[in-house]
Image (cartoon, rainbow, N blue to C red; front, side, top):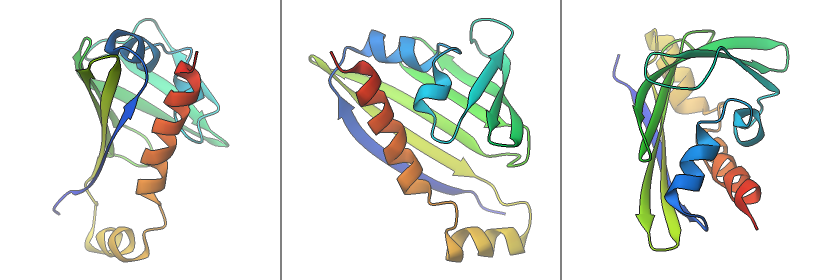
Length: 141
């Protein structure tokens, strides 16, 4: 199956190092990741590290697959939405940071592809927008 991807690019009013520090702090991920109630991590994030996140009754595991301070962070889900990947890219633009949020999902079957493509129950664009709104609120002076 071909991957389905969604991308959103917006700016936040904070330096790139502050944004990256917020994104990679396991204790703060639940504050900016929509629907996330808690995160459990064995330490600092780095490429290959795994952490668990709780979304209501659902718990899932993520593996860091892209980690290049202070520019990129990416993970793949190893739980219920197996294969769903989230990538964040940061570009300094003066006193602000351009944040590119991209979600890539590879359907496991033709039926899953059709449901994800035509019913759009996952409301991906809304979730990407919520990530950026949450980052803005957390980084506000």
